Length: 135
Image 1 (cartoon, rainbow, N blue to C red):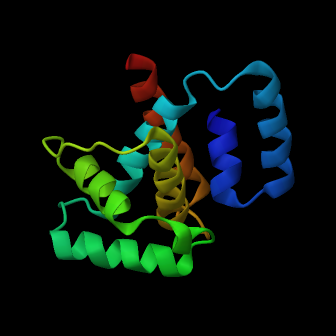
Image 2: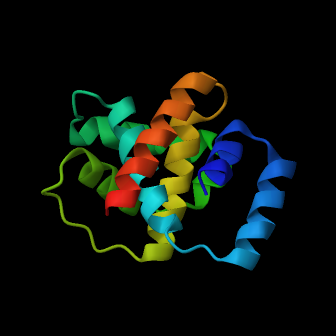
C-alpha cells in the first residue's frame, strides 16, 4: 500500500494502476489508516509550526484551484481535516469516503509535482507506515 501512495504522489500512473488492480484483488484492509498517517505527516510537514484558520483556508483554496479533482472538494471538510491534523483536539464528523478524498488530494498537493525528493518521500512514507502499524 505504501507503493500505491508513492506512485500516486510521483505521478507514475501506469504503475499506480497496476498496484491498484492488485489491491483490488487482495483487499485494501488498512489503507485508510495508512492514508490518514501519510496525510498527518504531510500536513505537519507543510505547517511545521501549526497554522491559523486563515492560513488553512488559503491553503485549501489554493489546493482546490491547482490540484486535479480539487474544485469538486468540499472546502469546509478539507479545512476541518487539516485543522484536526494540526490540532488533535479538533473534532471532525466527516464521511469516511469524503475524508479519504480530501486526504488524497492534500497529500498530492503537498508532496506531489516534485516538491519533495525521493529520499524525503520515502522517509515520510516509512514513518507513516510505522505509525499506521501501531494504530
